[in-house]
Image (tube, rainbow, N blue to C red; front, top):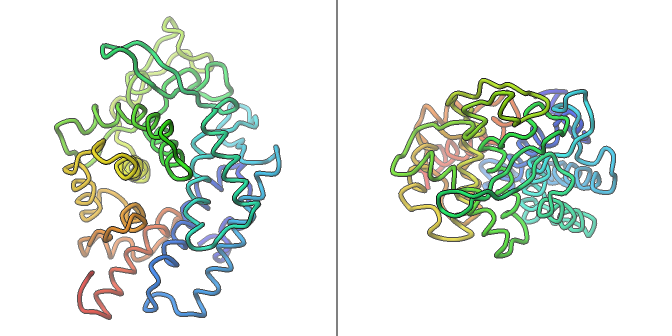
Amino acid sequence: MRFNGLLDFGSNNLEGRVAWSQVYYINGLLSLLKIDDKNLVNDEIRGRLENRVRKEITLIADLCNYEYPGYQVKRYSIDRENVLFALHLSRVLGLLGRADSVVPGDEKIQQCKLKIKNKIRLLDKTVEEIAERHSDNGYEVFMSYRYGYPFWADGANVPFNFISGYISGLLGFSQNKDDVDRAKKLSEKLISEEFKDKFPKSWRYWQGRGDSGWKAADHVSLNTPDYVGNKKAIAHITYRTMDAYALLKLDQADDGVVSDDLVQHLQLLVERGYLLPSLNEAFFDHGDDPVVMNPPVVNRYARSAYAYELESQIWALRQLAQEKYHGRVD
């Protein structure tokens, strides 16, 4: 891994490294600690891991105390303006919430989680916003990029993974009925358009105008007046895994929203390598058994070169340890 394993320790989010690096690999380390298998982690290594995770979580939470840099990012804005994404806030909140059960947070971390939760509920300073519009069924709730904000697709609806990341953060800490209702409404497009009466191995990155495109005469976007559209391009496995994770969190928050058949299908996709092994976090944290993956999948993720692969590597190593030391897989 980068910097001899230091990775993004103590980084800020100006280049998106908290949201798209630390969240991945720290979740992997948290899983390693949660599994609590001495065939994977002896006492000495466990102490080192806990110390590393505690320090990283504390520094990430410390960003809550500063308007700048805070969790703002320059990487995705048009002229590197400082912007704040609800998606990034939601990913940070999910990480801080998950860390509680392994590395109990101090009062500053608890206050940070409450502060982020309030921000993603309000969405008054983020690139994304939530709006309602009339539809054949009365009205629908959707998320879009604010028109005129310094982002290339301002005015357009957001891709599925933005919605999924947001849902996961919304339901990952101190949820109430309003949070669950909002998550259910936002998930309707993903469920109805990608999974209604079908169980695909993969699915689209975007839907709506983002997928079909727009013309200047449509007055969709200030920064990109014309866009050809995503044209049904398939989402990367990391984004599909985010989508699946959100559906599982929603199912756990309100049983029946996601069908049992779809949940079983998502498990099958992990087993066969169409979704990342890291989706096991959603099953394991909920008290369910992790998915037993096919040998080629386990071998593929037993080593890692990227942060998102490290998050999945833990589950591959767990399965290999189960097979080696117990002669079976639980």
